[in-house]
Length: 55
Image 1 (cartoon, rainbow, N blue to C red):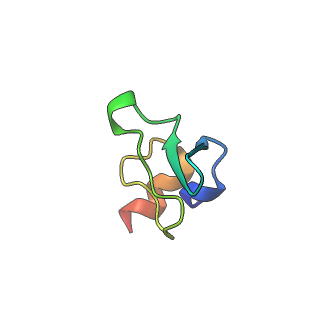
Image 2 (image 1 turned 90 degrees about the vertical axis):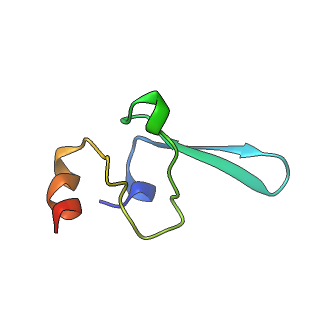
């Protein structure tokens, strides 16, 4: 599952054009993610993504 499809991915608008995204499943210091990329955060703790990251 990509970060942008995950229920833990949260996005908050910052200003008129930009936004900030984070993952609530990660520890506070590692929360920043890029949901517009077709990737998974390598530090993702979710069981469904462990196999995907390790490939």
